[in-house]
Image (cartoon, rainbow, N blue to C red; front, side):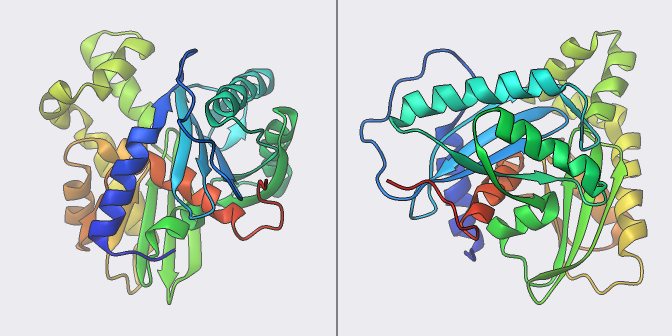
Length: 288
């Protein structure tokens, strides 16, 4: 999926209006989507995101919620993950007026295959057939369509890096440090609980104030990125993941790496949408 920057911005802005926070009551769609549907389930360290695309690869429904059921790409609360994802599936089916039977999912690069299987088990226990698994940076590039550059996915627990040449991922890496570390630093600096610090972090009104507090963690992310890109010919870095939203993140990464760095609109949803797009490559999309 390749699109111009302005088209990508518009696409993500429309998706933002459709992918909603989890809640019990959401009105059904005015019209039930027809044809194939493609589902992406993103089991992140901080957020679970479930996204549904229609036959034209447009986002028609989605839901997200804060959850700590995965740590560094590994499922640590299996029952909690299954229960939450199953409930999200049920709510989206009511919204769509259709059953969802298959979904793709993703994992941080470098996670052992035996551990990756646990992600597929969660998807299947929640009532889906798991149609495929893809590493998170490659999933993000399903949407971004980077030809030559790097994608850095700053998730809840880890930072994943992918180097892309001629549209193909040629190198991946993943290291601890992400949004959870941001939250822990805020909790310590502000004497808040983890949950209170998470809410404080997400408040746009606190972004400028938090930059000097979070800068050391941003610099850690930037140093990880710089180390993995050293000696490689990378034209541009794109940051994705919810933690990429932190004010000053792109600037710090660019200063450390010397490589132009940008963040798309709503970076939290880039990878989940890319996971759903991965299902378009599989053989079992939702059909009529």
